[in-house]
Length: 304
Length: 317
Image (cartoon, rainbow over all chains, first blue to last red; front, top):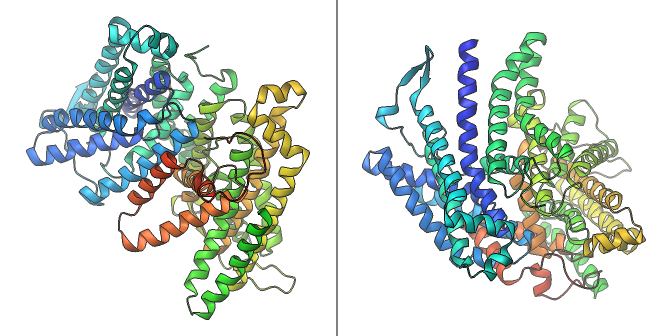
């Protein structure tokens, strides 16, 4: 039991860190451009597909990772220039519809290019085995995923708080008109923020690729989780996304993993097997409702 | 114009199945039935979206709940369609009240994300509920009976039933929109603060509209359950809510016949594209993108028909 709890806690942290990568891009894009991007989850999928394809052709996970990230960035740059920049000034409803259209296009697009079967993406050989952690075995690849996520989170913190670009981003999220008046090239800033956010989502997709199936639609449910994270944390707030991601990661993993066992203690096995998983997957939404009840604009409201 | 359009729709809805029958293409009666059912649920979404300004991304919940109410009621031996509709309406009204009470506390993009997330809550509820089929969904053993000497067990009889519901729902919506309630709802979409200042309890009005739309969607869900003899969690998934929004957008947000037109355009596109292309959703996506960029007010605006009941600026443009 202790073994199981230990593994579940680590898994939940690892999941939370990955959720942060996805949600931070989503919240940045919303915070700076006031743009609702439903296709954010699709880039989680596209990153994983590109990495799986390149890794399959070259036999190296690392080459897949290194190749997929700039390709995703380029695709984001291109789409921003072709489509999304024309939508910023429009209504949220238009954002929702246009980006939903991209979900349809991307989901069927990857099926058309790579077929309906999931693509295999193997973990790098060096991280295939378990490591001993406090005397208990744990997947070394999952540790790597966690480390990458934490490193990116620290890098993101430094980028936003310590660099000129980060200053523009913070200023843009706060008062866009003023930033424009100061002579910042906001069109370039927008394009950078947009593709940077998508690269973060793609990175999460690549790192999680070996742990989940790389298949069409893999980003759809992740998108909703990212929304829950952003809503809990406060739309537009990166620190909020970090806290929200940890909450959702922990509650979701522990809810799914431990609730059925918890119910088994005082319900019949049959009832526990029926109620446990249902309630386990509903937990994060109940947490979201609770947060919204007391803090309607999330834990860290970005704009007052 | 409005009258003429209505006459045209009704004539089409009456003639098409008769023609299909005569030409021996009974398959298309099923397609038409589907279009009419989706027209009902899309119109209910159009009511809160186009007239109430609420971009709900969880409307499929009520659709799915209606289907599940039907499946679960007939699983426990209820055979009367009237009792089932009452149950479907009750369940979706309660869910609409709960979701609306939470989501309407928030605004704009929060509202979109929260309706979406709450919809997933219900989705996972049914996925995990193994007693009623869980992930696989639940079969409905035989279509409920209507009584009154009317037979809805065949495809033809069922089509006329769905058409009757569509007309009843639109008669109700037309009345509502012309009433004080509908006008107040319009005013709130235009300027909520001003409506509040005039003295309207805006939250209560919007919640009432939300619940009405939920009940209509629940009835449509019950009809899709009776039509397919099946209810599955997929009906509640957020992508289904997305499809409903797409239908309303294609048809024309805030146009009285936007829901009907949108459902017809979308499902016919699906019918045609899916027979010709394996990966037809790409083309649906491209068409949707084109509509959003070129004609954000949908098909209705292109044909400049179906004059809006309201004056002034359109929401969503």
